[in-house]
Image (cartoon, rainbow, N blue to C red; front, side, top):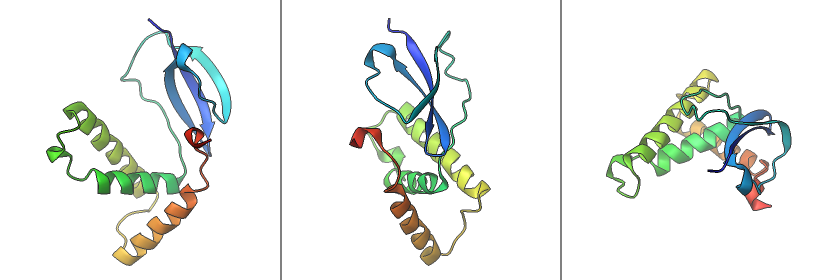
Length: 128
């Protein structure tokens, strides 16, 4: 079995934690801050992930728009649906905690437009 590697990586202004098999680690990231071998596979461990508010807004808007009716989506398993719903909940909570909620439609559309422009500035490794 391949060793799992926990990597703490700075992305944009925040930290993103990933676990990838060492042999398949062909991706490059902005900056490595530490690299340790996972001693266990504690998948219930809570990790902190920070990302720019514009990224959160557009990710939530995309999930809530494109995946709004997951119950009738038979291409995803129940576990995959729960993962998407849970992520959308976390993103929505982050938006509310930062005052990005309950806006009139026109104001919301303008804010999403700004987020779309902002997201063009986010570095995405797979596009290099």
